[in-house]
Image (cartoon, rainbow, N blue to C red; front, side, top):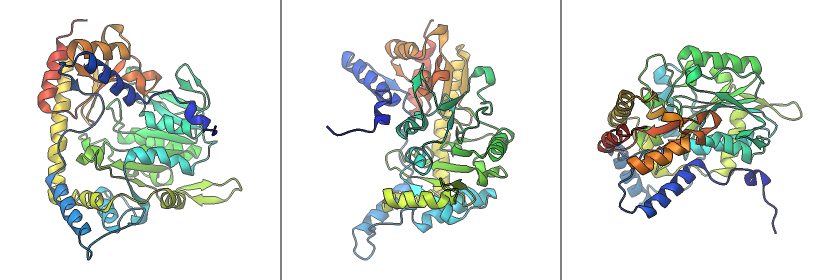
Length: 409
C-alpha cells in the first residue's frame, strides 16, 4: 500500500462546516417537513450584481469567437484586472501599490491555505482564537502544528479572543514567525482600530514576524477608525501579506475569484542565509501550481470597479448589513450577549444557560429550526459561543429572530 502524508492523517476527521452539513442532513432526513433556516455556513444568497453578469455574458461570447478567444492567461491575473485593483482598492485610499504585487486567484481560502508553500516547515505559527479553521488545518497539513492535545496543537500559539478581553488579542509572548490576523473578524464579527492594528505591525517589525492579513470582509466596514487594508498602517509593507476576496464583497462564492498582495519589500531567509523575495517565491509557486482564474470570471471582477459596479455592490452589502442589524438588535433585546454585526456580516453570541456550543446548536435546530455554527469549531476559546451569519434572506432573518427569541432557557 502507498504511504500517505501523515500530517493529513493527524487532522480531525471532518472539517467544521462538513460536520455542520452532515448534522443538518441527518436532521432533515429524520424531519423531512422541517422548515430549517440556515444561518451557519457563510454563503451568500443575493444574486451576482447585473454589471458583473453582463461582463460575464460578453466575455463568454468572446470565447465563442476565434478573433476574441482567450486561452491560458497570466497566472497572476490579467493586467487590466490587476490595474483596476491597484487603482480601486489601494491608490484610491492613498496606498502605494505596484501591479506586480497583485496576484489574482480563485479565492482567499485557497491563498490563505497555499501561502504556507513558500514558508519553512519550521516556522512557528500564531493564530487568534477562535479562528477560521483553514489557517490551522493547512499548517497541520504542512507539518508545522506539532501534536494535538486537549483541542490545541503544540506548535501553534493560540491568542484568546473572548468577552474578557473585548475580543482584542494580546500580542504574542513566544515570538512566532507567522501571525494570522483576520479583520473584520471571522467568526466573531469584531474589528481592530487603526491604533490596535498598528501595534501588530510594530510587533512584527520588532520580532521579524510575518503577518498574514485576511481582509475578506473589508467592504462591510462602516466605522471610520477601522482600516480597510493593513497597508494603511506605516511599515506594513515590510511585514504583511494581504488576502482579499470577491466572494463576500460581490457574491462570487460560486464564481471563485480573489487576490493576494505580496509587497516587494517582504524578504525571507533561505537555509544558506540568502535573502529571498517573498514576492518572487509566490510568483514561482503560482506559476507552477496554478493556471489562473478564468477569463470570464476576471472580466466580471473587473466590472465591479466601475461606478455602476460599486453602486450595485453597495446595495447588496447594505442588504446583508440590514440583516445583521436585525439579528444584533433582536437577539440583544431578548437578553442574549451579542457581538459583531456592525462592521461585519457575522453575529457572535454567548450560548445561554451554560450550554456548550454543540448543545446550543442541537437546541436551536430542534426547537427553532435554525442552524448556526458552534463556536468551539473555531477553536478552544470559541466554546460557549455561537455564530450566525447575515447572508440569508431578509424575511428569513426576521423569522429566525422571532423563533430564537421564543426560547425559554
